[in-house]
Amino acid sequence: MNGKKSIRFELLGLFSWGKEEDDEWRRKTAGKKELSLLQYLIVNHNRNISAEELIEQFWPETDSSNPGNSLKNMMFKTRQILKTMFPSLENLVLTLQGCFAWNPSVGLEVDAEEFERICMDVRKRSGEDYMEGLLSAAVLYKGDFLSGNDSEWAISLRRYYQTLYLDVCKMVLPLLQERERWPEMIGICEQASGTGAGTDLFLVYEMQALIAMGQPEQAVSAYENFREKLWKEFEIEPT
Image (cartoon, rainbow, N blue to C red; front, side):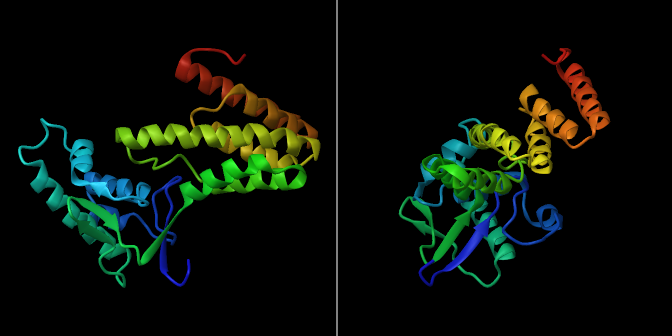
């Protein structure tokens, strides 16, 4: 990034910062609201964020008698979280006049942005390059956007990224089928079905791949598992 220091955040699936770690630091360091504030700052890292916007987002009028002071305290805790994550870096989040911004001397890389960029760019490609672009997008999607954050702002973005991902799966599956790349088809179908928004379409592709690989019993088992889950959750049968 032009000689600048850079840090990377993973937002698709379990929130992390590009290295292996356990969840112990979350229990000791980060409260749920502080973590959500940090994630909001990361998602909006390309712009200055006003104090008013953060107060409106995290402190409804009835939630705090002094939201300005609450924001000040929580921003202090958020900076402490960042120190735990990146002990060698200082002043990652700057306080400007009436707003907050990421320090421009440190670049941010965000997997969700990379995923979105590939999804938009791949539509301009063709042939094998098109298919490989779709596959690279699918690999980046390690799970639903900030899956542990139930804030309204995160839920709306979760739906957006989920829709992008499911569209990628629907576009790449027939291409893999044409090339008889059965194991990759099965992997994509299984992950897409696990998003909670999976459709019968992914089950059909998975069954076709299993049958093509000479595994009809597994195809029947996949169907029965899907049927049981569908009935348990919605009391409906597969189409």
